Length: 240
Ligand code: IPE
Ligand code: IPE
Ligand code: MG
Image (cartoon, rainbow, N blue to C red; front, side):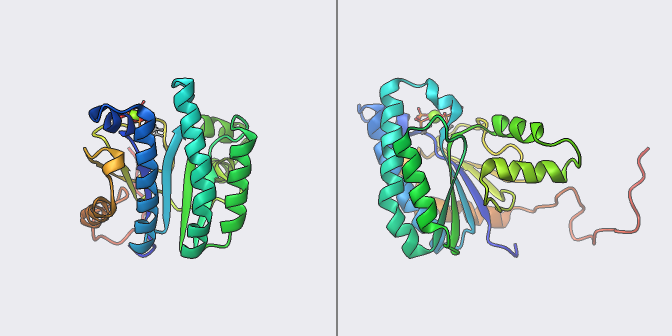
């Protein structure tokens, strides 16, 4: 692959990790936050160009209030504490998803982190917070009248983030053994390679990330074409 890959991660299994240890779910989320720190640093080291992490879905508001509050506190802490590390490693942070339902404190932490890290060029870290791919597609579609699909593509980027320039996802990883997308990056994953692992998110680390990237290297990506055949430009396929 000529460009550095875009890796998307559905970080799942914090609750099960905690339950296995007789701990409250929030303890699993705290441990999960540690795994996020490790994985972000490893991703920079391993040459990932864009890393998109699913941190909180629109549907996650339906969880118990105490859990939602704990998750929001962790996100806020992560954003403020990791800003210096991101700056040091040249990581540009962009938060995708709705913002209006987040507390002013979380919004402020997002804006401060995005502004401080905006010139980072080593890797773009996209954090999906209060994110729903279907909601985003609907919003983008409403803003587009003509020019499908290029206009929709542009509208989708804008509804993600005003500065979004991420390439399509190359590899989508989901931890915890679940094999579904849960409303994450439906458009961007059109040709993504899918990699499902049983590891629970708090146990996921650099070795797992390396294995995922090796797996991407082993996949034969054809994008609808025939392998090793040059794309035919002047002979469009006849339909019918
Ligand atoms: C992922 O872990 C974290 C979030 C969705 C915020 P879960 O909390 O979904 O963990 P399980 O699936 O209950 O084990
Ligand atoms: C998806 O995980 C959302 C995040 C990882 C943030 P969920 O645990 O919420 O997804 P479902 O409910 O198992 O589909
Ligand atoms: Mg889950």
